[in-house]
Structure formats: C-alpha cells, structure tokens
Length: 149
Image 1 (spheres, rainbow, N blue to C red):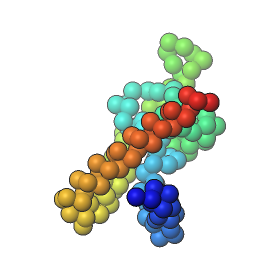
Image 2: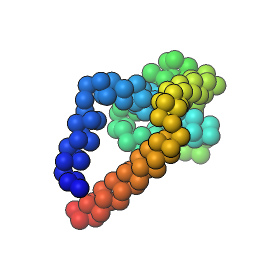
Image 3: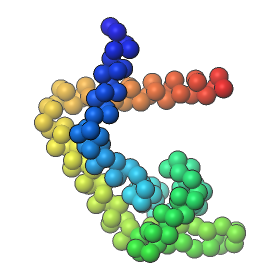
C-alpha cells in the first residue's frame, strides 16, 4: 500500500468544500460557547475555575473570559467568588445552561445517528473502531514527537 497516496486521499477528502461544511455542522457542538457550556455540563455541575476551562478546551484564558461573559449575559452560567480563596472566581452552569447543553448534545447525536443508520451496522462498527484507532495512534505519535523536542 502506498501510505503517502492514502494520506493525500485522506486530506483531500477532509478538506473538500462540501465535507468541510458537514464538519462545521458537527463542530458547532465542539467550539466556542457550546464547547464551554458542554464542558461545564459534563463537570457534574460543580463550579470550576476559568483557567481549568481553558485547559480542558485548549483555549486561551482571554478567549474563555470572553465566552463566559457572553454565557453569563445569556443566563447560562454564573460566576461567584470562591469561599476558600477570595482571589478566585468559580463558574457554574445554570439550569438554563444545562438545558441548552443537553439540547446541543441531542442535536449532534441525532445528526450522527442519521448518518450511521445509512452506513449500516457493519460499516458503522468498522468506522467507529477505525476512527478510535486513528486518534489513539495520532495521540501516541504526537506524544512521541513532543518527547523528542
């Protein structure tokens, strides 16, 4: 097998315009406000530091601050001073925020289910296994490369 040719075909497939539009529909769930909101939702409702949100989402603290301002204005999160360390601000998701995060997740799952149903059971199993393998190997290689630096 020519792995260079396979890599070129993969990049071509991922970068094509119509496929980019498809991925952007999925990424609404994985970027910006939705990413922060879903992250807070998954945090079991426990208040969290903005710096921890930045680490979890791989965003700058400035970007997180802007997003939190927007989410707070919409009534989706609250911020309060930590009782144990008054220098720290804790962020918590509101019930309205929880509802919106659940809705975003349901929409993303619904889109994916429609696609997987059309793929059929065998292709879906193979696809999910191969995507998992792809990302596991990518992480392994990136970690190896980081150790060399």
